[in-house]
Image (cartoon, rainbow, N blue to C red; front, side, top):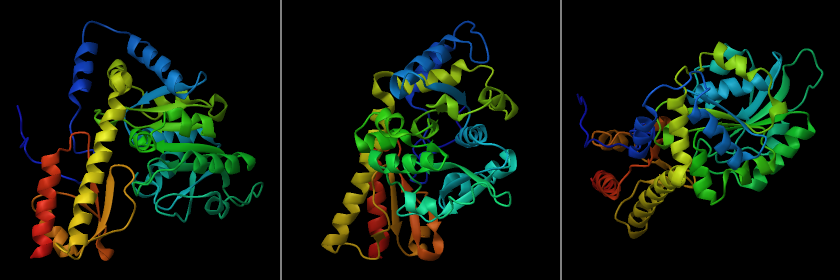
Length: 354
């Protein structure tokens, strides 16, 4: 029974897209006969092997249901009760997870200024102090997002500098990789080149935004960085009984480079959308539209009159990022088509010419 219009499209979030057909096929393949529950299945075992191929021989994987769970569990396992996390003021763990890190884990978040979504050792240093001071939550982890909340991508060198700074201070480095595949596609590098090789300790490996259905994972690159994660996952209600269906989806992204090709497509669509609109701006065909961040992955941040945005949204849904400033976010997905881009550009053009 289908309850929605399959022709309806939007640019609000890569969470709006469905499940990739190849992932559905992988689920169907896994949905035969019996497998041992709670992760003792063939699919989770194979996932562990694949993760080690991509993140190093010592890497461990813990499949979970969602990104918030991956982030909160990672951070909880990385620090003592009195620990604090230093992150960007835009970080998803700070702005979009309902206070889960603080409420569920009891940790403290120290936010710092960002530069087009990214933070530097100098930014981190503004909160990396008070070590040994009983009156201050102890900075224990730095968390960065790849690609960032503004769609920008950290280079390996930038991550290495952050990791070196954090480790020199006795802190650990967590990477929120909700869109890690998009970052890999943007950089043209394997995961290890901007995680394992440059000092990242733990990664929240995203899948839902790249064609999966309720399937994410924690990748522990440095096992010495965590304590009790196997118990915390159960305590935090992130342990799947039929884990084969989570693991099979994640495996599907690694097979035949599906995850990378899907993310590459999403990034390409975002670039195509921006290029088409920039061409119209430069030719004078439209006015009143500008861009507020680089487009390096699958996100475009634009500025236009909120009333114009509201009219465009009658056809194509998307979110305000900062309504007072007229800033909006447009996201492309693995299934965004050329026709989607053309229709969206046509609608934006007609409204900006009105």
